[in-house]
Structures are given as C-alpha cells and as structure tokens.
Image (cartoon, rainbow, N blue to C red; front, side):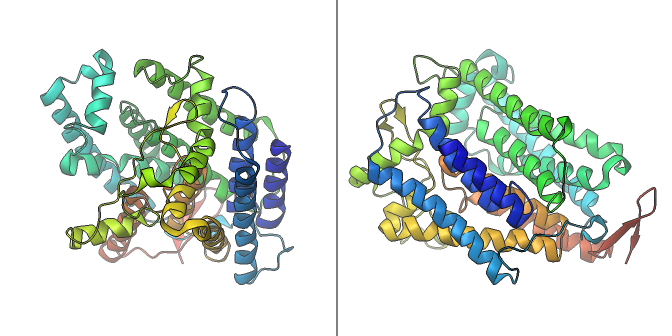
Length: 424
C-alpha cells in the first residue's frame, strides 16, 4: 500500500509540477517508500501505534498540501502544467566555471591541510590501516575541529554538485577540465568515513540534473533509468563497504539490514521520543539550528549551542535517528509537528517554481541541496543545518563578487549548432 502511495505522489508531482522529484513527489516518495521499507520485515522493529502511523501519513499529506498552496500562491493554477526550462534563459552560466574554479582551489587547499593534520596525528596510512580510529577522530577527536582546513575541505561537495549541473547544461560542449574537477572532487571526498558527505554529493548532483529536465516530456528509456539506478547502487555499495570497514554493523544480519536501519529506524525512534520526551532536553533549538548557532556565537552565555546529536534509544537496536520531526516536537509540540511540514512544502515549492520564471545555475543548485534535505528528512533535520546554509550563502557571495570583479552579466544565451554562448 505504501509503495502505491509513493508512486501516486510522484506521478501527481510529474503532472502538476513537471518532475517526479519536485518537492511534493520527492517527499511523498521518500516517506511512503520509507514506511514500505519499515514494514518489509527486513529488520524487526518495535511496532508503531495507530496514532503514530496516522502522524507520519498526515504530516506527509500536510507537506504535499503546502506544495499545492505554494503553486497557487505563485500564480499558477493547481491543474496547470509547468513549462520546460529553456537553456538559453539560464542565468549565471557565463561565470559558473569561474565559481567552480574558486571552489575547487579553496577545497583543494582545505583537503591538503586536513590530510596533513591527519598524517601528523595518526599517519595518512590510517585511512586503510585503521579506518575505525580515523572515524573516531573525525567524530570525537582532533579531526573534528580541523580549523579552516576542515571548513574549506567541505566545499568539495558543492563544487562537485555545481560541476554536475554545469556539465548537464553545457553537454558535449563543456570544457574537459570541468570533468577533471568533477572526478577529482569526488575522489577527494571518498576517503572520509562520513557517509553523509557521499550521500549528499550523489543525491544533490542527481536532483540538480533532474530539475533541469523540469516540464520535459521524457520517454522512459534505459538511459533515464540507468542514471538513478547506478547512483543508488554506487551509494549502497559504498555504504555497505564502509559499514564493514568501520565495524558499524548494528544488527545480526548486517548488510542490507544495516542500510534499512539507517533509513527507517527514525520511525520507531520518534515514537520513543514522544513517549519519553524528558530524556532529550538541553540540546538547544535545532529546528532553525543555523540561526541558533549565530546567536550562540554572539551571546554564548544566554544561548545554548545546538547539539544535533541526540541520545541513543532502542528500537530494539540502538539508534539516534529520529526523523526531521524530532526538533519540531521537542521545541514546539504537536503544533510544530504539523505546522513545519506545511511551511516547508510551501517554501520549497515557491523556490522550485521560481526556476520556471527566471532559471539560474544558483537556483538549480539551491533546489538540489534542499531536495537532498528532503531525502535525509527520514533521519535528521538538515533544513536548518549550518553546512547547508553555509554552502548556499558563501556560494552566493562568491558569485556576486565574480559578477562585480569580472563584469560578467547574469544572463547568457546559448544558440547555434555549436551552442556558442553570447552575452544578452
């Protein structure tokens, strides 16, 4: 039943918003698909109460209703189809390659600094000799606060995503050096044991490509199916490989069972949180965590620094994954649980539809990042996460500087058989 609901949501999203992966289709597919995995029996979780099942179904429908309201507020009738994006109207393409070069230079310097620090403390060979210790140092030890190197290295992810978007727009006419940067950034991300980084890179790149196909009538072919399938298999293989290397198996069955637990253990964990909320106090406000962290930096004595890592609970296996609803429930109660999805659906849809009216490279990139937050909403609330907002704000600032310093216009027109770009 849940898989059928996921399919219906994605088909409706294609008809009303021009893409299976518009916010409404993506959210419905992820949440109803997640519930299908939960009831697949791969892992024997605690049973969900009828009221909790209703909560998950209702909040998903509230999110979709928020998307429909967003479409109406944007000035497009609910039943009206969304037009395709015209490549000739995409803004910011003229200097997108310059933005990629800046990001790559910054993140490459950060990676060098990061790996030098790792080599100083434990030897670079620890990456293959003792990956468990590397993971420990990244989460709890000296590599967690790697200074400017750690922050700069994190920009490998947006650099990789921007390369994918740029290559999709330019096609065969794209410079070979962008392909080289794409491959190098991906390879430099791989040694990290943080699977969230790889997942964010793959999913954001995939969504960015899909949003450029908004409104197109595309026939189902081997090519259209192969891309998402290869992406899913690549991440699944990486996840299982790192699970074994880091000895992070949490079930007796391991393998796919571990993947299932990371994907859907948030359902029973959230139920445990609702039953015993007192055990989660004192972590600070993380629904809008980036704002709280800014306030903490300004006034550390009055503001609690938000802690995104929750205590473990049993489901019956230990997990600290509670879905994106955890902070809404702890900070705003049941009103927050049902209001937050509506506001997210509304805001994300308005941003998504803005691609239709005035498409730009940055808008595609931002929609791809926030779409990734939807995919990860089964495990955590990244909508207010510091890294997501840092990647959006910093890239916006760099783009504005490039525009002023280099004198490039935001709009470009691609025409002719060789897709020669000329300033409008």
